[in-house]
Amino acid sequence: MAKIAAENTKANPNLFEPDVRMWVYEEEVTVPKESKLYDGDSEKKHKLSEVINKTHENVKYLPGVTLPDNVIAEPSIQEAVKDATILIFVLPHQFIAKSCDQIKGHILPFARGVSCTKGVDVSESGVQLFSESIGAKLGIYCGALSGANIASEIAQGKYSETTVAYDPPPMDSRQPSRQASPTQSPSASTVELVNPHMEHTEHKSAKLYPLPIDFPPLSHENIKKLFHRPYFHVRMVSDVAGVSLGGALKNIVALAAGFVDGLGWGDNAKAAVMRVGLLEEVKFGEKFFSESVQARTFTEESCGVADIITSCSGGRNFRCAKMSIERGVSINEIEETELNGQKLQGTSTAYEVNSFLKSQGMENEFPLFTAVYNILEGKTKPEEIPDIIEPKD
Ligand SMILES: NC(=O)c1ccc[n+]([C@@H]2O[C@H](COP(=O)([O-])OP(=O)(O)OC[C@H]3O[C@@H](n4cnc5c(N)ncnc54)[C@H](O)[C@@H]3O)[C@@H](O)[C@H]2O)c1
Ligand SMILES: O=P(O)(O)OC[C@H](O)CO
Image (cartoon, rainbow, N blue to C red):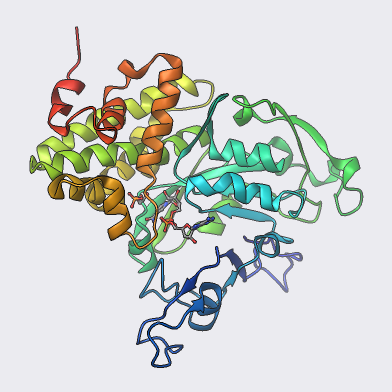
């Protein structure tokens, strides 16, 4: 959760407050012998949030990396979002809905969001981007960040690129003189607005609060400043659907790549699966998000082709799928034994995308996505992938 500096003046030239509050889902953890909290009892349990604040290390999910001092772990989700201007969502997608329910009513009415979650939100009413469902649940505008971004590499300060899609309503790049500040009169300044990225929801006319008059506009330039680092290069685009779908669907492609690599078929087989996966990503976007998606987001940006490449090389979905074939056990077993509580996004996404495609009668139009689902279900063998993805007359 970040906060725009209240006074962006010459004396305080920073656009954002230095502290970043990070909600930590509280868990009891043990600390390693090297930790300054270690007291000789390797079984002793500590609260994860306290360990992070005292040692600046997330010993469970990012061990061995020192977090910056300005990242403050906060176990209460309501406290974490309090007064935050920008809410950044980086949760496994299965936890997003509940987390939004918990913060509804506790956020600034004019807060804005950026979703870094890689997945799609599938329900009876159809498929939604998480930027859409977060926006609809909280009544805020939400953009998306996604890219070829394996967390452990970024945490070590190794160079990577990412794509941020932020297509704010016109009032966010407003003429200050035409805006009232919600701090002066919150309800009076509510603006009725059709958010183009909510067309898949019933919330077509979200009521969005404008930013306060004394806040800088959340332009591409300013959003870029929030994320860009010397080792983490941000490219800004406006295609929220393309960025979100690239991040979600590549997880299914990475499973397929893991399956063929697990068979020992080598790099050519993996490349074939990646090529077809990229085409199915573009097709999915153009069929179901045609009003906003741009094919070039998949073919030119980090969130598209680059994320397929990195995820099919060293991502968890790829590695676990590969191990499951090599060891002849289910991918869920591998997730349990190898990931120390981390959650694969590809398996649930494969099921969710399949249930949506089934509802549309379009399983056959996405043979690779459908094959991955059928392999997870035990109905198809990975060896069948080449025939399945061969174009049929
Ligand atoms: N790890 C990566 O390399 C990476 C890179 C880019 C994007 N992403 C995306 O970011 C999102 C988060 O992935 P991750 O790798 O940080 O998570 P993860 O796989 O490490 O999953 C564990 C996280 O879930 C939290 N958690 C566990 N139970 C919870 C609960 N009941 N409620 C809320 N939170 C709970 C844990 O605190 C932990 O932060 C995913 O959508 C993922 O695709 C991950
Ligand atoms: O480890 P994965 O498979 O969840 O992928 C991590 C990132 O999404 C890669 O960009």
